[in-house]
Length: 450
Image (tube, rainbow, N blue to C red; front, top):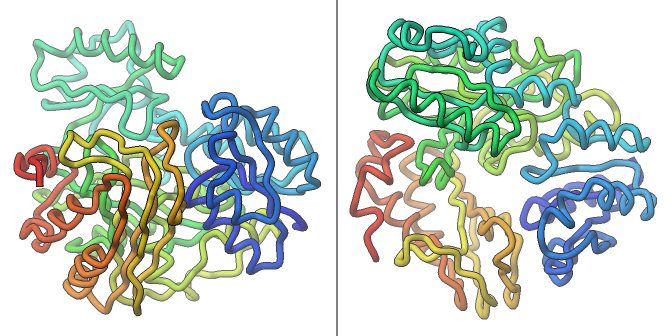
């Protein structure tokens, strides 16, 4: 690999550029007109404007991205996360252009992108799944009878959904048929695919996940993470390893995730996500993300493995540098996603210029940032500014370190979610691992003005 084109923006573009440079790989990044002065544009050796600010005209424009990569003499494309990272058609376009795709095969992206197919693949691989329909719900089937067998409450999920979208809850039989019709209509409008499936709903569930790597013939895991602290299905705080899991549950999650990767002939980095029911002490498959995750730094901190480096090695050499025996775990890591949002105004986006910025420093502190002092936060994209990561000997020490690091962070000119992170990390429910994926919505004081 001589030159890598980074098809993304913000902190992940900066992150990819850093590892590529350490490996002696030249870098180029495509940016929108709005991001021309961004940290990502400065982080790469070269940058090129893909188009105007709207993502559809720039970051999501297949022809513009491929054209820019070829024009700059790149031989590989790294999509990061979001945007085109899980787009099988784009992966095939990259391959057809003679470029190296830093990601899994398009077939694996398609299989895992269809949630009903992914659920069936997981079941075949021995990954535990929630009780539900085996594949998409047949429009002609007796949905009432099927739902009675599953039990209430349940969820109607779009087969093509993801990222918390395409999900509708059903509490009793009187809501079922109407909800299915609404879900099918919404799925057709949003995802272009009206198929849905039914699944048992777990109340007060935790969100846990397993990081996997594969090179098509060898497959390993790099432990687990807990991403239960969420707001509106978007992760807020993540930690690794996942706390308070029975050893048997943890082991089955890890081993079955590796087996799912094997069944897919997986190449690259991926994440198998689960719901964990702390009452039944059972974990069940949600989906597989066929890309690097936002929260990958906490896995890197507890393993010492550079996941982006492994992605690049697998994409170029065809083999990863690790075996399962090489992976060792040390300590505990916590990540806070810092967004440009106003917690005192219903988390409304807070674009503007950052007039002062000071990150904390010290042992065990890492900041993956897409902004610097003077950066302009635009209203066009995701509001995440940076990820503040801490690593300590154990979970209590990591919580203390994260609170201290947040207190030392200074960002002026825009509003951020730092006050919310401090409140969440200080909650006894977090310390006791009594939180769940709906905790913020069910704790009214968390949404009150600071």
